[in-house]
Image (cartoon, rainbow, N blue to C red; front, top):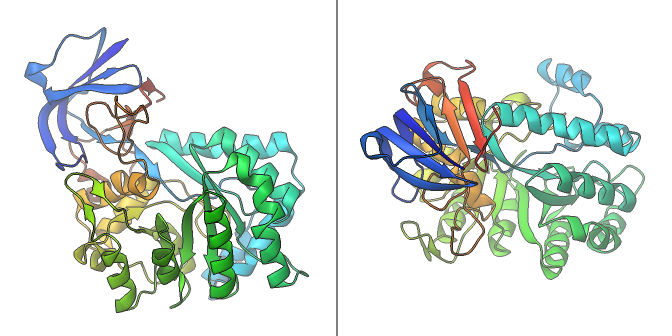
Length: 403
């Protein structure tokens, strides 16, 4: 079955050529994009969708979420809004609620959050474990996550449970817990931050997970200056996330990690993406991550929702894009790119086509997965021009219209 989406007022491809096409059309064949070009040159298809002059973007790629949880942390949020500082300790509240919730309800809650995200244009989702924090519960979270998300990250190193010695728990994360989650996960992460895991403990986690064949990610530099960015670069992590507090040497290290990368061809040694989480920054009242500085230094940037119950209970990538434009000094094109191609780059899914069989996400190009987001607006500029408005008109995920 082929579908022609025609009469597009604007088509923002976010491919390697960063094209923005006018009066354009796209042909979808099964799960793949088969053709892109001027509407007047479009080939015939089995069915046709008239976009009515609307703008078409790649679907959002949300590369950082925590969807496997139960419970509520509104009291913590209210306290923070009243002036209390954020600390990592609130995670323990969610851990207790998650452990006491059965598989069926935990899966139902997670699926509901994915459905909410898809309804707003998100077509590719990563999520993490990290609210189980013992071997059995982390394995359960990983198994459930593998059934609801596109990519799963092991985050046993989220917080040291109350009453446990930090080094003993780190050993558990690096040994039996890692073995238990390994069948369900592709990535591993560590919260390298005051109140969570020290540099030395984080190093042990990253080494063990790399030895186990997992790709690496790091929560770093969220609450203050620290070693998260430097560790991420040292270990070749695909991304370092939060990055609110960066010294000059942190920015330089991230930029240098991409020195062998050819952005036009998408070839060479990949570096570490800086993933900014603006919804979390606003909720925790941390300074917004310096996305403008990072981009100007040549560091690829991703935007993600960080959907979680404590610090960012939203899956709205449009909200993140709007914030990036209005408060982080990105252009609309840069913000949309960070929320699509940037997220794909952070997940190692920016490339892939008909030849290799693993289709790229986060961009619109022939052979890539047909993940498409049609706005109820003539251009992507309306995402920032009309902040907070529900602008998603239609969504295709792997070629299937889901809204």
